Length: 206
Image 1 (cartoon, one colour):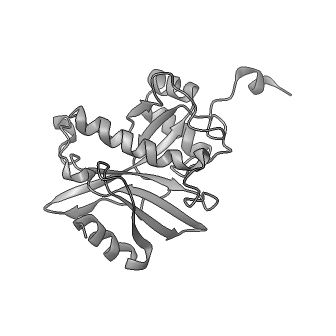
Image 2: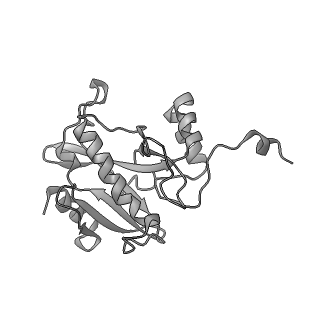
């Protein structure tokens, strides 16, 4: 059992933390079964924090991260062949591979296009970028933890639309986060949400 697994057992209880089977060349993953207002599942990396990220000096203390997807109750992880459900496993591994192989770093507000062609994540998840965020819905549950003498942060992976990406580039992360919060958008995956940016014709529609 890894140190992270043990610490999460202590935080949530052993019955709420389990290992996810992955390929031998992939980073281990943990599944958290949590109870908020409704049951949710969280897929979180189990070892990305072994990699010390070369963060800018101003972000000293944020070198160690784990990333996660927060799944709604309707998400069925047993449908391993269903592309509407299983893309989360592919993308969490791709993000880990990118940051470690490029010897780069992840922080709040970082974004990643979904491939060179920026395709939609699935038939139902039309977003085409991934946005890393400090926990919103899980702010208390996934607060930073102390492990191996340093602080480990959690970053949620939020799918966003192309226009939201453009807005973030033009207006900044803070203003995009304000849009999310005012529209009730968190790191919880939602196949049914639309962009938080209304078109002008909608603004003037009567």
